[in-house]
Image (cartoon, rainbow, N blue to C red):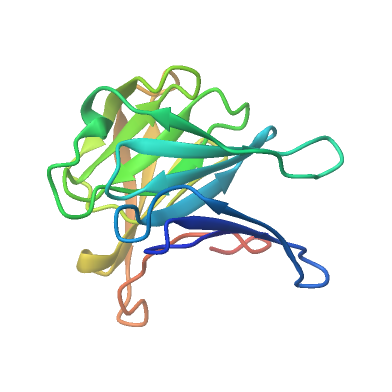
Length: 184
């Protein structure tokens, strides 16, 4: 179980069966980094930092052992840290070749090349927090609108269109999206 440590600047790994701590990573200085979200790919775990233009990567061995982390400095529009709270949610394509990050201040989603850190606009005007890329659809939690939005990205991830918006008074400011069986 990989956990973003928020204002501590840390990321944590726990044994999902026993709950025992496996590893703790100090990605940034407390108060200087906000480790906000994490996504697991075939090769490892990617963490966002809401105040630094960086993603942190923890490789996972074929036997499930986490390795030493590395930092990826972003370039392009996702690297903008002029707001108080910037990078937020993160998702990955199934092959792990493209990451998608939510940027709270810019109200946009960006694609990121995990090898170079180069970013490009995917879609704007989205008050995104947590995101999920599932079966070719991108689910976006928009907490301040109290809704979940389903987007259909173009096959080349150069844009996306809104397919559905789900609202409910029961959401009470949704901040993330996950799949459990066949339900969100």
